[in-house]
Length: 230
Image 1 (cartoon, one colour):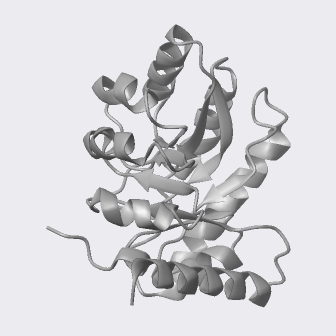
Image 2: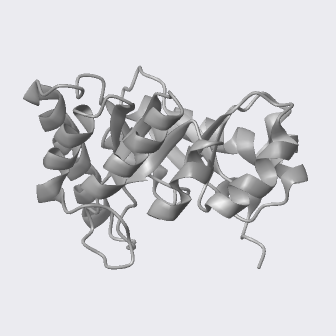
């Protein structure tokens, strides 16, 4: 089966999950392209798919020039080091992995220098796993309020990586917590948080659970491309 055929299957799976919970809004599919050859990514973009995510700045810098012919959004979904901010902002339309006040400030300064407005998500570690990035849930609202004060950042919502577990109740509890935090941010009335309605959560293995808990965007890699090449 081709990548394009698997992409269509994944879209059908997302649509079915949305119908099962009576969702009427759109759930977007972000294609995580970590380590994938550029020709495979281009083949998917040729179908009209227009949203991809990179885990590493160096991979984004290496592949994006070859994808210029295909209109698409480019999101940074992996951890972003401060010394890679300028390089990331030259290519990314959105940074989903803002996990500290310091990184938010660094992004804002860089965006100001280039007179840009940058879309961002606040990343939250709802599973309390050391291997995952993101602020603790009890710090999430503070981070969102801080981002809202920065003139060159636009807060679109919250992002998380689900618990590394096959226990549905555990995984869904984390996603439910992210939705609760999003609702609290929206209700806060704090400057710059009024448009923070998106929830980027869920991957190939658990997208149905994420959508049931309110995901507006799921990040899919292996479900379309298969196991990543080494």
